[in-house]
Image 1 (tube, rainbow, N blue to C red):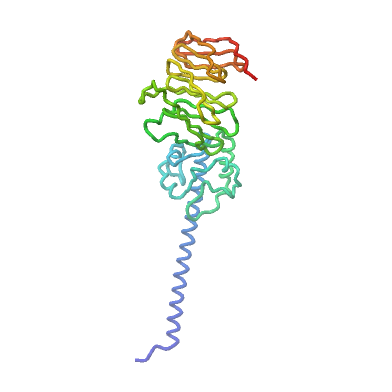
Image 2 (image 1 turned 180 degrees about the vertical axis):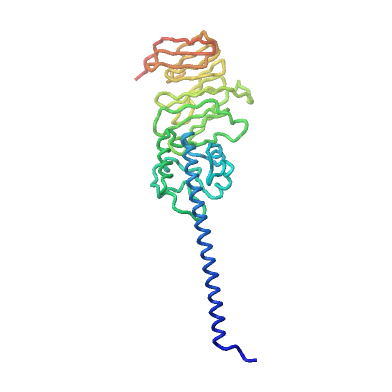
Length: 324
């Protein structure tokens, strides 16, 4: 049998090459078309996500923390006319949202540097459609610039927070929280961080398993002292040195405490003492029963107490001059 002529072999070879080229071209065309469709789909989903977050910010004044929060935002329809939040799984598959971002940073970014909301996979540029700029504008209009959640206690028996007080000092900005067994002080100037823990000493006449259910807090006007009500006493602490200065014993569980001189009250009785020491100044009686609110006037010459029976008692008195 004679071998096929060279001309025939060349024809077959060219035909095979043509078929291979056409197959590759068809595959490349398919890939280009499918990538284009995917990019357009991701673009539409991203624009929807920008609108969704903008709607959330306009309603709550803060940046969202989870998809669950965004699913509660009423939207007339989702991307491509789909129902919302039914379309949430598909949106989550295509869109990445940074839920821990600082919205202040988001508002300051250049639109083309915006990455807090971005598509997963191929996409057409979405930051020049106006959605990013609209979201940034909404963040700037909101009075809320951020939100942090502080975990104060892990133990079940110590989870309740009874009172809190801000120090009058501006730098750093600190807030004290009264828990069952301690007072935690946090620096909340930027990222919250624990800076101190005050553990009130338990008097010998108080049982080990007895913990008051009211722990009022108050800072002095200069922020140098912190008053706290624990164990049938008002304890005054040196805030900077983290040590107790003195304790004023009372015969009730302290309901509220205020600094000027200093005062603590409940069961219709208000005790006033010198804030610089444990010097007792006065014992006052409020007509309206239990005392739940106390306030000094700015010049410290009037003290007002309120309770649960619709009465307010106003006292006038002269505080002793401080030693120079």
